[in-house]
Length: 246
Image 1 (cartoon, rainbow, N blue to C red):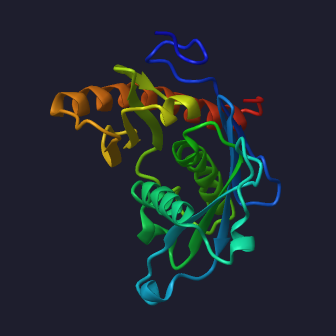
Image 2 (cartoon, rainbow, N blue to C red; image 1 turned 30 degrees about the horizontal axis):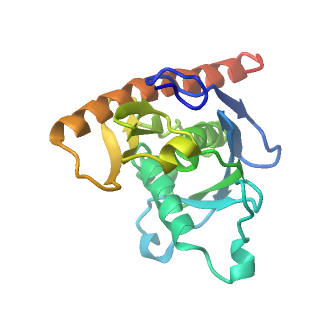
């Protein structure tokens, strides 16, 4: 069986991360993963949520939204509905947890970093692309705080990235596009750190339950793809520091 776009089963879609995509954000990046495009921008606020006041610790939170025509059919704006949709809430919590997992929040001081993830175009894997792109935006924002003398060092313990994997027509596949995700019998979203630790594993069977062997196989496939994403993240940051275009 051939994949929709002709890729190998263990091959990522073409990936590009453009750092500094928004000029006024403390840190930003636009990530392209095949036809999926997500803008990630970090804003710094000199305050923390009420439950952290007086603790000396910082906080990282995320907001996620899709433009109305990011997908094949129009998606209403949250503002027109008068509320943030359940899917958006779940995804932004997913992004926030992923970034907090690799950040020394105590080193931030009492300030909040808000990560806005806006989907320009959606062809599957928007939440995982958002995590991968947001790490670069977060790194750049923290680096700016260091350069301004606000922080002593960049308080990141490791990099973090995410990818989707699944079983489509009995084949294990890496980085599912929308058509593959729609038809998957099993699909996982996996978040890992560059130390090889898992932050989150979301796995679902759409019909028939899956085995422990299936889990192990899909996690190994996800790790292979995430290792490649770490290299792209690092290359993007390194090229920016040397003045080269990523």
